[in-house]
Length: 136
Image: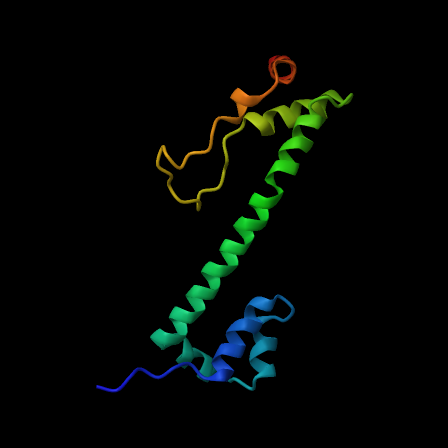
């Protein structure tokens, strides 16, 4: 049996440019002279779809990595905002700190993968301010 065909350079270029973020889907297709009918055929090709889905997964991984890289700074900023003179700002920062994450697309984690309880690491002074702001 023959080896499955690889994607063409044009197909690979279209996929990469779709994720470059500089052009819309129609602009990318026009750039590579890909008609809607041809693009629809590509979307029914398992190899094209697999490559496309891998690229989608990579984009999500990159986004999660960016968020993870900036999470410590965001956490520090929230903690600093709990000391804000504006009570509403301090209260909202407190709520953001203690609120559970709202992302529903995050994978389910086992207890071993669960991050340590950050509230347990809060200095007593900050914890007291958080509780006082929430009690208001």
